[in-house]
Image (cartoon, rainbow, N blue to C red; front, side):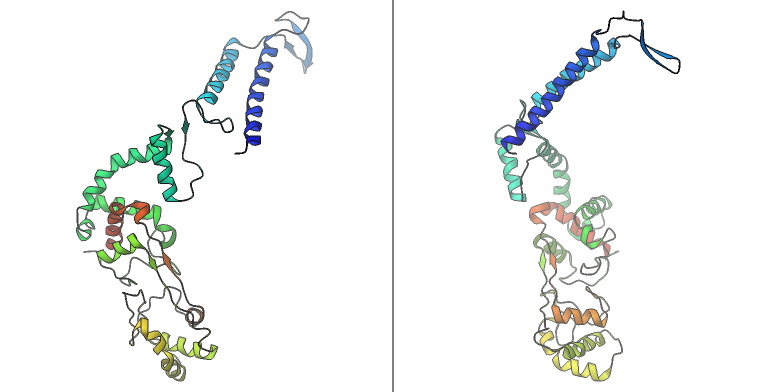
Length: 317
């Protein structure tokens, strides 16, 4: 905050308090030539105002509020750039990355500053860290049968994964369904955990510059036919001739390659839509899907629990 705005806030805040104190003092004195308890010249609808002072309990409450207000402003931040005598703040401000947040947390701790968010994080680590460590010692397949672990994993999933995959984990266009058996990079526990730890970068190249619109349509019809749909035989035959450029990733049979994240084209699972128009759009413009890495955000122990929960969604045994 600039010096100008800091000074503006200080003057405005303290000036308001001083003005209120003056107003209270003014109302505590009798400035009219009429004895207290006597009638004033104000009357409305038969109701006459009396010259009564403010109730004592009311004035005491006002004074207590003023004392508390000045005490609070002295101890805690609130007056511009003044940090308060306790050197307390709710969180580390102006951090723009996780690394900056951790560095600010360390610096605040070394300086003996009281940062409420940091205290909450450390308290949570002390309380729940041993629980996650105990879960991390169990294999994912075994952990997927632990109801307590699944409850924790579900909450972590809802907090961090549901924004893309949905609260029911069934995904949406561009976001995989985690409740079926179609896995781009493999559905084994180790595959799921690797995906969560390291993230994934999908890349379907664009062929709009390589093929004409007619060839794109032919190729789209051939791809659609791989999943058993009946398409025009001439279009399918023409598209098959150009499928060689796709087979490098999806295989000659179109069944995909989990090492590359290339989807199986012979089932009815379509990440970006399976209509001819959607397939043409994918072929022409390409797709670039990103699954973020969560290792530095959540830590390996929490990811181990989420992996068990995700694994359980498509494995009932």
